[in-house]
Length: 124
Length: 243
Image: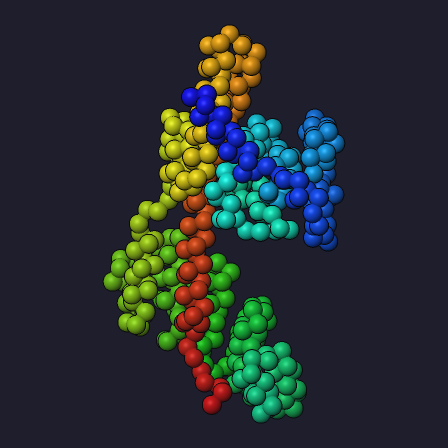
């Protein structure tokens, strides 16, 4: 069983890993406004969490998320749109979708990424 | 006025309206009011169309009444749709409105009766679709995912998401079990927390997925109704002003 898990982990890492030549290769510059710039985060805990993650992990790791908005921003927007519990559950679901490499072609594209905003998951 | 007609027939409605209004400053012509009203309607300027076509003593009463009905339909004011004059589209639009959830119910024959027979196959499909239950139950979706992680996603047709959820929860649960078994309690509790978190997230995601599915099929159905009505110009009787 451990061997199977190890193979699965190595397989998923090798599929989703960012290789060096992608990291440093020439990128198309997007002139679209940064969606995080307009973000007004009221909740101080979420704000702290989000900014810490951005500063300590995301910025160092480059722009890797396949989705627009990114998973962290999705979490913030989910909490803003609902509450901390529902937001966290929606984030867990989003993270599962992020790990799913098979479904990617079903999304719309925005700024060269898979468009998957929180509005698609909140119904009133 | 001929230039106005030419613009009207080329669907250059705004300029046609200007021409017609210029003409109406000097002469009286009731048909021109109808053309102006129809031009406004074609441009989706419903308020102006309504105002112009509400004038008294205009010809083509059935066309004017049909335009009112079409406007009410597009504004979703289904209760205001009615048969005001012979040959208007009231009965057709009321039946189509019933597909969109407007309260009145028709049986199949009654539903199809005012329409041309060539439209019956398409209308039958819409009618049957409306009367079949295509909705997915959010409760069932959540319950399935509670029993087998990812099963709710299978139920709503998101197969690969279901597989991913099953694998993720399964792997995390196994890691938790294995670490408990090996006596690594701290790691075991971390994996237990993660497994529980993604398990709960999957249940909630499955409920949302069913709701999303229902919204999507409702939108698709309404879009096909709108497309059908656009193709048939909301059953507004056709007057050939462009001979």
